[in-house]
Length: 584
Image 1 (cartoon, helix red, strand yellow):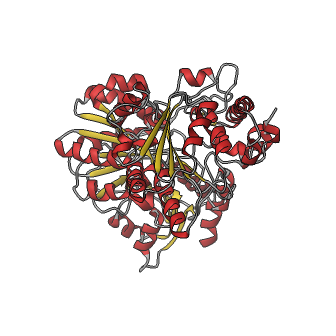
Image 2 (cartoon, rainbow, N blue to C red):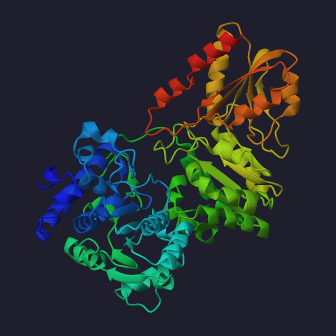
Image 3 (cartoon, rainbow, N blue to C red):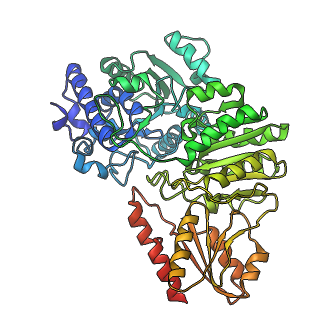
């Protein structure tokens, strides 16, 4: 074995091409060992293994700077830069993140990167900084696996072309995003592949960049040869390499979409080690939307490269036909196209993770809400129970969305309420609407839910008591129910309220509580700073009403333990009850 002796890229320098090929196989084995035990991005890393070995053989990191786009294809890089034990030893896997991280390794990882299409723009800054300070290192940006479709990638290419000095852009063309590629640029990329890079039309040359093509992107020897040609170049160049997503593991090659990311699995057949049980709210929503498309010819489902996130697999996409569009990894376009579709009279529904909606703040405000177009935005994963790499935390959505003027932000508590809100939002023509899709469990309503939400900011009182009012938001409503039941066991008849609307206050109800309540407690599955609870506390500020807010303190939590996070933030039901009783 060679990998056991590789502690830094310098240890590759004396190897032959044949030895590098063996090393690439060992690195791939390490990647498979990690993802099968721990879960993670499978296809992107398997496809970029040979390229990573060749990169570190030819270039001289950390002196040469490598920036990985999305960085979900940096696992082989981590193995070659002193972190192989996080792949080979199950006991040490939790110490390694799924993305590049200077906190983890400041020598070789230049940026915390979790969102897409940023590498070329970041590289342009490294270029300019180098040039101003008189440096001579190579600046290398790795982009691909769908990340070229984001707008920042084009802005970065434009800027790199303007700066005009050394930059090497490795475009990993595996013919895929998470799902199949979407967008006009991919026709040109196909043309470049089919002509071995010789097509007259060339996207990259149009930006003023030099260009070479490598067809055998999983051939270490060919890659070493290409990288040696461009090392220390005095101008920007794109090295377009054609790779196979999932290379070296048959299940990942045969089902590239399903193996983009995967939970822990058995290597022999690819079956899940811990198959889930029970209902999944987002899966049920995806099924409902697929059925609703057949009933409503005006409805269009929009994805931004993440259709599997709302369970729109290839079969559902094909069945939807023109009623589905994937704009690529370009969430900004997703919001803008939804707004314009609604303006034209269609019923657009754009679904994506809360963390990715952060990229669209201006579009949500300017393109959508300012114009008041009745598009629907489904906010996915917005929970402490969602993704937990700190680049992907999804629970900052309430501060971001609920304060945009002219945008109605709804928080359903059950599946039935979710569908009622979706139905109303899609059919109404008055408001821009965002819906916080519950991400923790799948609760059901025992009673009929309301179907009309046009009377904005009308909270629903589930139980009227006295002294204490508990306002529990979205998928933490059930936690609020448990708190109220526990208080009842102690002789406290607390009021329970489902606010439903995150973007406004029910002033009449809140004022009415002043008559016979002395404390209002808010519970939300999200950030305290700028959150729903602060809205209620601000309302009661000039009064004698006491308010206590339960939520998550503003912080970049990384790969946290959910139960520990709950305890640290006094979000367990026992802690909430104790804190309420302490105030009383």
